[in-house]
Image 1 (cartoon, rainbow, N blue to C red):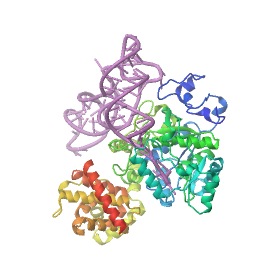
Image 2 (cartoon, chains in turn brown, cyan):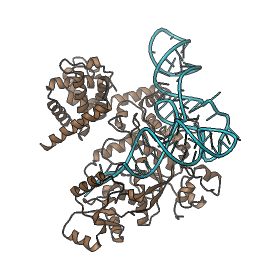
Image 3 (cartoon, chains in turn cyan, blue):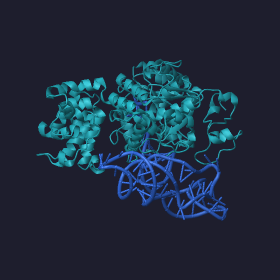
Length: 547
RNA sequence: GUCCCCAUCGUCUAGUCAGGCCCAGGACACCGGCCUUUCAAGCCGGCGACACGGGUUCAAAUCCCGUUGGGGACGCCA
């Protein structure tokens, strides 16, 4: 057995605790951890080793409820075992990462009530906690693998790669993609570097046999090696990919248990292999079931609000949201529905995680939230919470330029600006009826615009205006006609504060949700129609991009 | 298409590893009733599931195999 921390693996898994000498794990899928790790044996010495978990969000967008969900489980596991929980920023994607997103994610996680022992904001002994500040480390490790022959330089251009993929696909790919440069000698490879050819570093992967990985919830998982990519470890910009950075950091940060989304199972073999190449002990892998949309697909903003900011804006209490996330795939021993973070920690047990992907059900979240409001807040506390929520100075301040010209009495502010404080509006098809456009045209305008807004990175008035004007032109509708249904969808009436500013202030998520609600009021978009529209939409977007 | 994961009411789940206590329990939603100046809240009740087919066993929601269904991965994104 590896000498390190393996013994503390999932120590609460029953057989472990109650039967000193672990018997053979049953052959069932959810085999005991005893069968998962080479040969761990409970020992008092190892139990003193500290559990360390982490959550590692990528700052490429709005804070996602899935991030909070994974963070919650990592937090609970670490706390339950007296260990540490770490926050690490995985900003290795230079193009998509942003400081604003990072700040928003940190704020959102703090908002739901999670805290971390080490992170970019609080520091710690294993820092820095932002991967963009650790590039030298990854480069050194990539070099080490290169020198050891565990990795090679790949000089394939993007076009060549695309062609290879297409060919692979066409011939009915049975195995992962290969690279012709894998066969080069080091001298040949060095020569190409000397020529100035750009390259990436890929890892070598066995081309036959089967990789066996151990999952803390599922037991043994076997994946044929020929299904595993020759994964890029170091990109041509010198930055590492997730796979390299994550392994290097988890090792150097002393992570003992990696709890992450199930979507990572298929890359686990690469990670395991990297640990072997480096000669490091691998943390225990625990893959959490994915949060789902009502149609069971992986939770996505297109189908369900996913941003924590949205839930804040809608008036959900952070403790209720966190509580609800704790009900996703996990249950209290007595099945209680309402519990706080400390209680969840106290009872946390991997054995109580169920594996079917849970559908994120906003209705049930609302009920839970109502329970928290009714049962846990005094009149004073509730009054304070409503005030804090509604009258956040920055938010109210932003409305003033829109309200001022329209106010004769202060009380007018409620009628004119009330919709800023509402959640979803109950817009009907009748309200959305348009004097020139057909309901289908309205539906299309709202849907396409919503898509176009999703593709827009900046959520600011000029960008929003450009998208709406562009879409109106593209659909060949007069701006006035085109905009009319948006006023209804966003403000609930035909005339309101200026639309672009209003949407900017309302925020991306609430705007998206209201547009979607309006579309739904008109009958929604069927799967077939969405497919067709999506095709036309993308084609048009491409044409526009080429101009 | 290939590989992997998963499978209890519409949804979240208990029960599954240690088969009998389960003709399957709780919660959301929905429906009905009570309470109530209204609406909520609260309380009471109703509807509603072990995907299917084979095994193993005295006994299977629970163990095994297969089928079906759902999901994920197949990026110089994470």
